[in-house]
Length: 117
Image 1 (cartoon, rainbow, N blue to C red):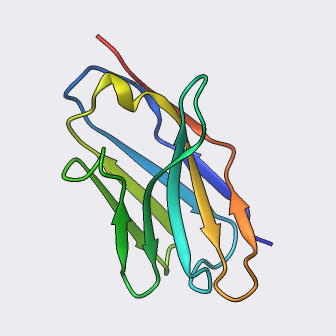
Image 2 (image 1 turned 60 degrees about the horizontal axis):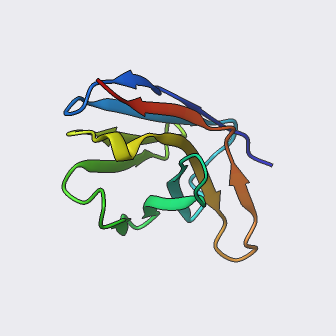
């Protein structure tokens, strides 16, 4: 079992930056896909970005060119660098991990990101 804990959320003005971190209680080296999802009030949870162990990265169109996902399998950390933030990026951001063959899925508790002037 792996526990995921997000941090780094907060209030930022439009155009600003934030870096989210996700700390895993165990090794993430065996977790093939790690990712960030977000859920805005009244909306469904949506994918923001994923990164697979070989380094295959996928971004939602809405964040391409602004967000960067990275993982550190030695430190058991997942990061999301968010630049040029927009009010529509306001949401609770969740860290996610999925094992390749078992499909075991892990979620963090979420961290609030608010983009407002």
